[in-house]
Length: 547
Image 1 (cartoon, rainbow, N blue to C red):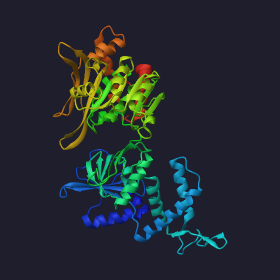
Image 2 (image 1 turned 90 degrees about the vertical axis):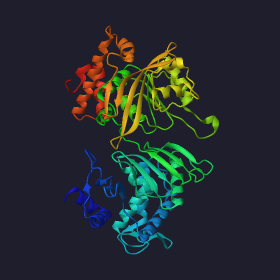
Image 3 (image 1 turned 120 degrees about the vertical axis):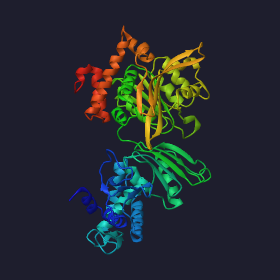
Image 4 (image 1 turned 45 degrees about the vertical axis):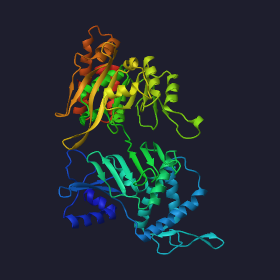
């Protein structure tokens, strides 16, 4: 029996779906536990995302679209009644239980109360597991809802889904190949798929009340409850996913909406980004030298261009014993270092108790960090960040601007207002963008540019593009070879080179190390960090392979 047959045997609803699909299309989907390699433009794939949930990706040239179909158990009207009855019994008993301290304890408590509220395999009512009425004394019989084993499994899933999980969007929350989830109104749930871009799902909330209840529940999880008077909330869920909620038909004409950015349990590594073509090994080696030697770097681009992903991937280049402070509105930065202080803004509550990025940045500076990471610079904290750079604290940040020229315009204009003569405190800007190449949705680094400084005789800031992406060939070229201001005038001098061009040997050595990791299939973040860390400490003798 193969994996597909075993999955259908365990999950009758999947077997029922597949049999119906075969009759309608005369085709059988391919069962894949992992989406890898070259996938067809129009797939017919079943992807398991944890029993009892499966995803069907199906498209044909005739349809000219790809359907994203979540397959989960369905409740009949009778089963829905039993589910509601069980849920009410659990809610009645819950106040007598200790308050769970974690999600794990909550799951265990629900499982316990569920077991106490049902009788499996009995045909009567008000029975225990042996099919006998449960006597509590004084002639009182404890109510137990009779369920078959199939009903028990279904209701167990829906209790977990609706109380602990993410409700109707649980199937797509489980899918590791999603980046964004976007819902407009009751039944318009779309996703951004890592392989197939924007797809519409078959999921929905059914009624406006269910959608409103779900939004209130989610907003409470992030500690920023929504209401008609406070209709917008933004924050991070317990798993790290970022959610933005607009809870009002007054300001969202098509209905209440939300956008959720999925959180990856493990950061994308720099090797994976090289494999995907976002950058090449020489660009990564350049950033390695910059961050290892205390340069300030901004990752700039438009929304969804991959700024935070690139920033996280590059943090493995910072020396292991560095003291790092990160400052964010919602927690997304994940340095692998031991000495890391994570600071989060507090926007709710009385005005005097609120803490913004500016205050956190000032607090971080008093702690003498080796590196400061700012989730996004957009206001008065930008001037403080540049003051930090002036005093020798490297700053790494994301920034919303699609080109270096626009980035400088924003930095020197309202509300940031950095004097243009201070701009050279920033050493490097990486410009990222989401692009379409031959019909495919890709993320690319458009350029890496060095900030040389402000010159009165040229009337502005001089920058150098050390790397540039060619959209026609999808190739990055190294324009800064033997012409890099940061490598030669900054890093080579820190390293003590008399011949500053020797620094390029260091760059190419690091590029070879990264290429060797690619060739050997070493691409998980922790594995990549371990090799980089050992090289920084022990040189080539610390590598697990020759270069």
